[in-house]
Image (cartoon, rainbow, N blue to C red; front, side, top):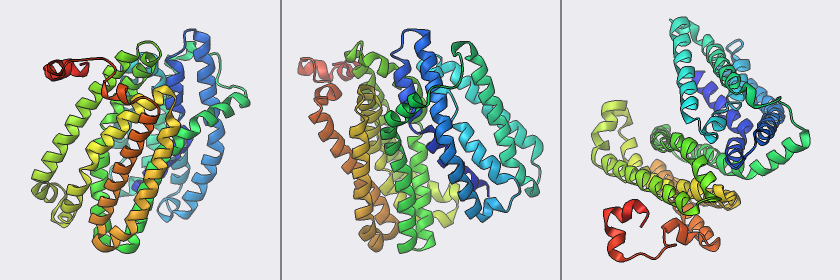
Length: 392
């Protein structure tokens, strides 16, 4: 029940958030007057309220169709309400206004509060029905604290519906890209369940979650650094590109290290940590791990080069084409090689996405900026101290 509820809450959060946080952060960093921030804040709140209507309906239908959630009294309401509430998190506002430490402090406070409530009120399996009411309560308190801290920075919550609809339109492209990844995972798992055994599905699911956990490390950095890059793009593009290349170097190096460690030690780490029944996941993970460096490339290009320049439409179309490639090759590959074939399909999808993005940034005239070729530099300089820390 808890896993099903968490999955539904996360899906509703993705729907109500609708790419607003990314667009809001990009708008905020270019403001100069407090009144401009007030308008952006109210537009964001109202747009989320409008999306809440279809989200609540979808959530109610999903709860009714899920026996695991519907059989627990009251759980469905708090699952849906919790997912919607999470979308009203204003961490994006704090980070885009230079208060990343405040955002982190609020998140830590919410985590500690949630854990304290769960430990205090859940003592036996029969208490499982208290999980979502408690997490909703901690989320509500965390949200109220965040809004109270910025209470003097806005004059109200509501904006004209036309302004909110315009924000929804501007955010739709980012939503298409972000939701494509979630839909792709669901479709891949479903296709594999039709073509392979439950053990194969489990092996793919474990590998997918481990890779997702590795990529999730980029999210906190993006919350803090993406607004800075967005700000610099219109003021000091060379500095913005330098920061983006440094971010890429750090995460790409970590991804390559992850590939090496996984291929060398997954054979005994997976059975040791997860149990011997997950040994079939080793082969799948050794294929999936190559998704890490490729995904780092696509995410850095998208978050730190395309979105700051309002070229997210290229990112969305590339994501859709990559998803179509995944689905088209998944069926034959999964039919012959099961979970390993599906992992290979995922790798081909990420590779095609990277190639499409490379073509797009070349057409947009950004290739020299991405590679740092916008300035003349001698060969020795490029190789001394890692190209002067990628500034060349």
